[in-house]
Amino acid sequence: MKTHKYFIVLLLSSVFLFSSCKKSQDTAQEKSGNTKMKVGLVFDVGGRGDKSFNDAAYKGLVRAKNDFGIDFEVIDPGDGSDRESALRKLASKPDIGIIFGIGFIFTEDITKMAQDFPDKKFGCVDYTVNPNNKIPDNLVALEFKEEEGSFLAGVIACMTSKTKKLGFVGGMESALIRKFEKGYVQGAKYIDPDCKIFVSYVSVTGDGFKNPGKAEEIAISQFSSGADIIYHASGLSGIGVFKAAKENKKLAIGVDMDQYSEAPGAVLTSMVKVVDEVIYKTILDMKNGAFKGGVKSLGLKENGVGYVYDENNKNLIDPKVREKVEEVKQKIINGEIKVSAE
Image (cartoon, rainbow, N blue to C red; front, side, top):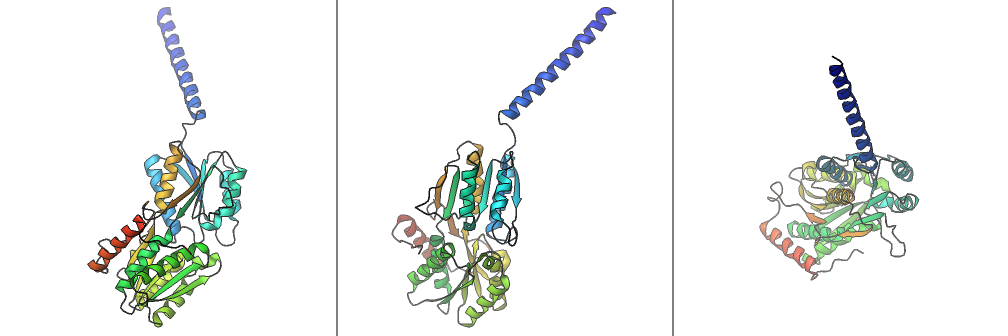
């Protein structure tokens, strides 16, 4: 009987000892860094639901969560909010390892955050690169060659246009959005030097990315002046351009994401930027310990920009147009065609 009791006590002691060791091992693993990775992200003007730039960034987060099991926290600053405070709030959280700012408007603030939090990693989409300013080692500046993708949009628009009059609606009048405009104009003029392009901006501030009503007014005016295709680079304001195109039985060109669903049958194509992909790949690099600061510039050669041609819109693009745009695309990649960003 005593032997039986002694055996039970010994067994319970062993179980307790094993449990204690297991708990210590788990704690050690947590301290060694085997915890779930967490990402922070602050949206640009227009916020999530813009069906464009911000939604593309969010799509990258969701994909990383599904594929890698990461957690994430996002902040939509809203009207008049302090973006620096939003970045600082996320950077101050010990469980968040990398923080993204979405949009060129974050350039100055995120550079300061990277300096204030050297133990954190940062990424900025559409970072405004200034050769005179050093980018911190813990910050990756993600920029796109929007002018190259926009050049292709101009080729498609000019070859498709019946009036040889086109429109461009920009959100905020700025160096970044002028890259879209300049590339588009160059592409159209490459096809026909006499092609006329009406250019208008919604605003000189960030509000230009969230004013569909004003963008609609501009689009109606351009259509009334003879334009039959309008390319927009205006974020949420682009919804107004699509509405005007649909109601006037004209065509529009989307931006950043495939925007065909915004006005089926009235969206000729979209100039896409793989914002979701760069968010996803930067998170992957972080996860694999391969994060590297500095500038990453993505154009046609790097598949960073492009245009939509699929089952939805191929009936709007003549086979000869498709053949020509692919030819032009390859010439840009090969350096035979130089596209200016200014």
